[in-house]
Image (cartoon, rainbow, N blue to C red; front, side):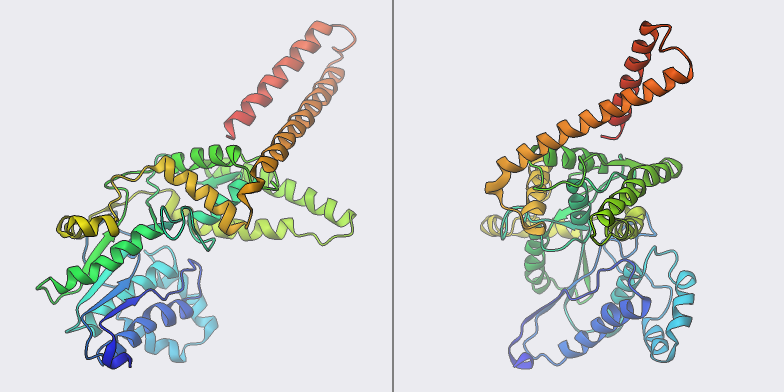
Length: 416
């Protein structure tokens, strides 16, 4: 039935784990592409293939055009080597094999594009390269998301108050695209391929940075604002995330604002006879953050002429149905929907309970401020006693208290 009836193939299957074992990444993303192309050659009615890659398949370059770049190794040679190579040896070789690619995911995606050239002759193939895929803007529902990959996990961790610090450049481009926009482009690509006279694979860089730039600083600020306005039902701590490029500062806050509270929380859980889980959860979070560091600290210049050409050639009636034009996207509106989508579709919380969540959040803020105030008074009292000022000058002690409160306020403000 496949051989006789299928006219368009969408190849979206892939492992998207950045830290995937190299053998698995190659078997799924490269060998899988090779096997699919072999199958497509047998389809008698086939008119077009859409292969979904990533805009970061050549992220070692700062300017990325809509073309397939040469790979550092012949994919078929690597596929053959994986059949006999020991897992331990391959794991040891990986750090020396994949650079200048930052991880096995982008490395395997680059090799998959090379496979398309060698194995996709006489087939009309379009390679769609979306950048960072986020929640839906419109379809199937505003804010819809079904996984913690990419920015979704970051937003969830910020909303819960777990993520406090992360390596990143606030001024770098956060090249996010809504998933439904990417799907609309994918649907339009076969039409463009069929109407094209070229027999070479066509590449479509689907990115937002060149037409409607969004920064990681805006992502941070809007996420905090949205989750304070529409908080999750049960926060771990008051949301207060911060991007920093300083590794020393990041390490300090990781120890002080991640691991220290995590160990204290686990001590409380053990005292209650419960299983300690917070430190382990932070271990998973830190591994996820480490895999994203490369992308939150840099910006890329993506050329997207082919995407623009499709948009310009679409009839007006089709533009209304398949609207993937990113220049008109309101990031303020999108980030609000994204945060609500994390709350509803990832954390499985109901919007009709939002008033109660806001009350609980306000109560948590009041308790936090009260505790911090008490801690500040205790610290000032201890300092004053050490300096033997408390018995001699109430003015000095009150001044010291005021300064401590101001310092604490500035410290907290800097974390927002």
